[in-house]
Image (cartoon, helix red, strand yellow):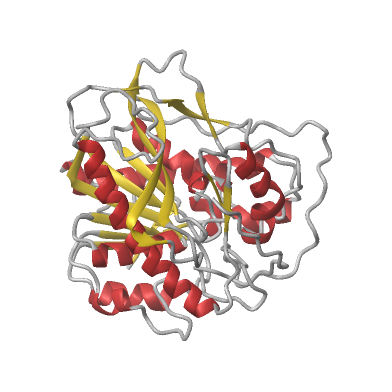
Length: 422
């Protein structure tokens, strides 16, 4: 892949919401926020970057993972003039067996990790992390590379994960791995040239393009994500039929073909990924149920997006941060116009990044208390992680597995930090 040069802009703060600042004037509510100017990233205080620890998945299954390099021969890449077919990287997480002895999946590949450390975390996500304090490539997940699929022959519901703008697909690994440990096949998608960095099997790195028109960029990003999502679903059908969709022909884990129940597909995402979940459901009827985690449904001029103006006839859950938020107008319109099942939840003490791995990883870094609070709020990190896992899994268990629990009926004493919004 040809490398695209990352934009190098100062990050600002706006209304406490975290997203990406790809341009100093870029404002898009909670999808892409403008944040206050902050000092340049500090240098690490240690010469030995830390290997961070992710929370252990709570389900009964071990977790396996395989990365797939996909190419859509029906489309030219929409972000790079002169490029060839649209190419994506996705990761498939699944319930596994015989994982012992298999290498653990790294949190990030080397070149992607270096870019994330020096550019993404500070300039796109605006986290203000000291450069070199975390070893993102040496940090490992709780998934094993290409482990055998558990309960071979059993078909499992499929979930798609869409990250926020300026977030790599790995930034939701805690929740993704937990869902896989509970029996789901979960596919995480990097949208090339809109993701901050995508490392391909040959070691090449594709980075986020610089937008010239913020409004047009985000409209295009959603259109491209819709097409990418439908293409990935198509390729999962190819995989499930026993053919290998990986461009490089790398072997698939034993038992993965035939293990996907593509009649039960859900999707969830954070920030722009949550918005993309709604728009993808609006364009692709194969997606049965969706969750938007703090992603806006309002356009630049403050009017509701089309999907908010007519709603969805399928189940949809809105999960938002605490405090003042400008997701309000779009979410209110969506709920008013949605004939299908819907709920809105608010995680008390949470910030925009509390629905990502930031909640689990940032407390392990040497950050000033104020920086940590503005990134992930005041909620106890372990509480935030387990509460998110409970409600996301409960939603999909209900709508994709027919497990009629009562967690989504109203407030629960087990999870007092999750508030139901009328």
